[in-house]
Amino acid sequence: MKIVGFAKTSDEADSRVAIILPTYCEAENIESLIISIEDLQIDPTIIVMDDSSPDGTAYLVKKLQKAYPNIVLVSRPRKAGLGTAITDSFRFILSRPNPPDFIIAMDADYSHNPQDIPRLLRQARKGYDVVVGSRYCPGGKVRGWNLRRLIISRVANGVTAKIVALPVNDFTSGFRCYSREYIQEILPELHSETYEIQIETLRQARVHSAKVTEIPITFTNRKMGKSKLTNNEILSFLMYMLRTASKISM
Image (cartoon, rainbow, N blue to C red; front, side, top):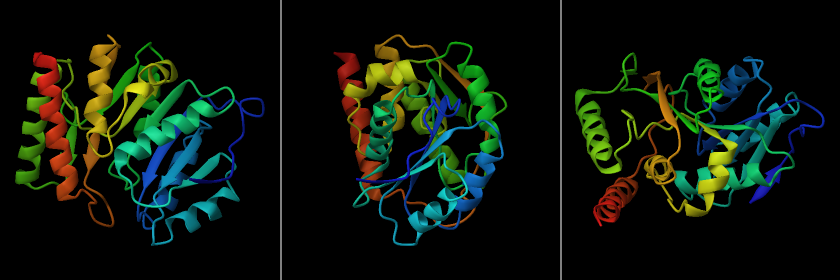
């Protein structure tokens, strides 16, 4: 991995929040998303974990670094999956001197509203290990999905709830806030390569008796570009669920 730019350490600024933005071909969204996050005035460290996007995503991030020294660009040599992007980001953040108290993961395509970040943080500061931005808890919404995709998502979450047995409505949401202590505890046990990382981080919450809660969000189908969820990643997700079910039933 190639790292471009190092955000200010806590000796220079009170940055107690890190935000992970995994990217692959997000040139249409990344600039406006980062500027929206910067406008929140929460002084985060922003980690852009880019899988060598051929559309110039990294180039745009490097331009933004000139104005915002709190941005770190980590370029990986190839598209290696969301799960490894998240875990690589966790490892990078925890390797920094005096790592932040809270780590937020979110999509880089504007399907997650950056205005919800302060709400996640407020809830996390009440002592929760994981706060999920939920589409399916009371008050949560989904915009821009057809009925078929919505039904598939709701069924997948219903099945996951039965298997993992946590009081969570949205196991597949990618909008999360984690405590540093929780990530330090579970990181050695995270092995997902793709989208099943969302389930794995919550399954570990059950294993470690972590405190988990949800806040309602409105999920908006990506503004620009197209979904990068492949058939292989869907298959990997299903296989992970089968393995998880077998482990828990033993």
